[in-house]
Amino acid sequence: MSTEIPVSLGTNGVWSLLEAHGSRAEGSITDEMRERTDCNQFRLESIFFEAKPRPYLVLVRRIGLDPRRAWEATGSVVKFSKRAYGLVRSDVLKVATAEHYRTYEGGGVGIGDADEGVYRESLGSYFKKWNPEAFGSFWWDAVTSGSVTYQPDSVWLYCTSLPPRSRRERFALEQEFEADCTTGLGKPAMVARELGSALARMSPSPSASFDEWFDQKQHDVMLAKTPLKGLVRVTHGPVVYTDNAGPLVDAVPLLHRAAAIPFVKSLDYTHQREYRFTVSTLGKPAQETLLVPTTPELKGLAAEVN
Image (cartoon, rainbow, N blue to C red; front, side, top):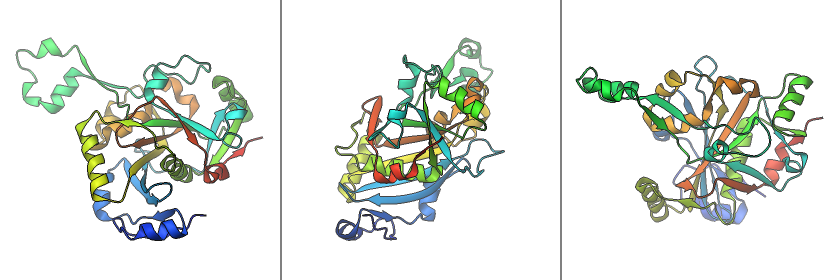
């Protein structure tokens, strides 16, 4: 049983209470935290501690890339799948990296996407932003034909959709995803929290590589300076469909840009009306797919749609 105890972030004494009386405690979101986590496109929604089987911190953010609809309320989301893999029946749910979907060769024409999680910018645009003095110089014409590719693969994706607007739309999407079951998951903010909790409670923890020195440094400091053994970040929000992603992506501060790219897709996929969750730990996922044990709280959100 989980007992939720309001705490301020950094209160070490909370662990003895959690271990004795429950597994989760809500953390206070301070102004200082918001300065690091929020911008026009991102809002920190919640922060909480999971104490069992080891102390983990879970951060949940909402993303809104389309300024016209950025913070519209989303009542519920659904997941299309084989019935045996639906959250009501299965003991695991699968999350996967963007790289997995870029090279996907399985069934379901709507699943794979060669450009999943990829953002390309022309060299001309790139240099004009970062080195405007060079624009118009004698060597400019030699480099403007290329492009810069952003391909962040440090998160797992969990892909859901907004509820179908008709039985015909539902049938078409089930066909596209080779699904025979539509599972309602309820409010996405709750899905995000319980997805993060499920990842934090995995034993053993998901394996990650620390190829980037900054990830390794963060991990070492966390272990040395806090009682935490791990961190899970969850971001959720509607996918924006466009064939001109530049203005949307460029509007995101550089610190948050990599987290935004998985929420932009080509107009070819507009009909999927996808609502996406990204999940990450410190470091880069060591495997393209991850089977996350479904917790009672996750199962409690799910109901098969008749």
